[in-house]
Length: 309
Image 1 (cartoon, helix red, strand yellow):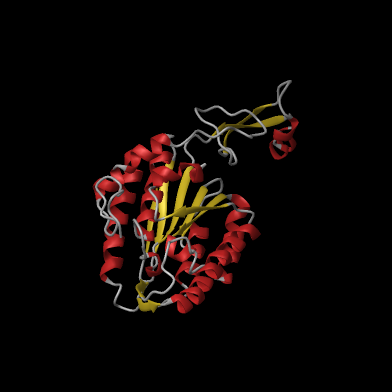
Image 2 (cartoon, helix red, strand yellow; image 1 turned 90 degrees about the horizontal axis):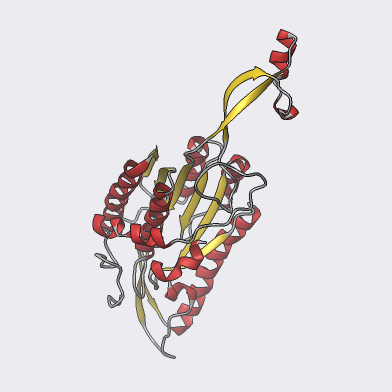
């Protein structure tokens, strides 16, 4: 992999705390979103996604001008006088990252491993959440473990994410030759996320798309009923067919825990397989009415800010 354009403190293969701390600079450069909310909300920012939830505060006597839709009919019936419910805006929204660090993402042909780019993206989204006063949590999924980080505020949220990413990524690199193959680990991660995500949460799914089976659709559908979801597909130039290659070649490739030698003929077949996997992930997100953004591991994340809009 070329190292001429590597991000600050990064080598493209491993992860360290300093390179993930530096992602705060990218988060500061993210554009603010313009509101499409149907009603004004108190707060210091707006979003293309649904607004924060409203938490019940108390019941009081109905007054002229109160919204009749907030009348508490049970209390009204019990007391014989009209009462209305009062709500306060939930200021700290839970942001949850579902980060797929399966072995298939430990692949890179140009600048970074896809897993490294995914970690940079997750940390950048995390910094953005913390900078806006939200609570940050994550579920990091691999073939051998699921690391659950409960949403926490301020620097506690981002620091627990950085620490977990560095540890899990290092463990996955050590286990590349172990040959683990658990086709259901992302399905179980989706089930687990369905149980821990509170209504009103914003969930970012970050993956190379290789392990999202049809079974994942059911738990994600349930999540979509009460949460906002966004998705990122992290790709690589060789897997996209955009890397310039000679007419004839023999290219040794490490794909997850498999060693391959690609020729022109086998590369075309392999490329078709990669495209089908990626399209399967995109199709699933489309069924959920979730927009999928593509990120290239062959480019700096800072040069792809438009994809983070």
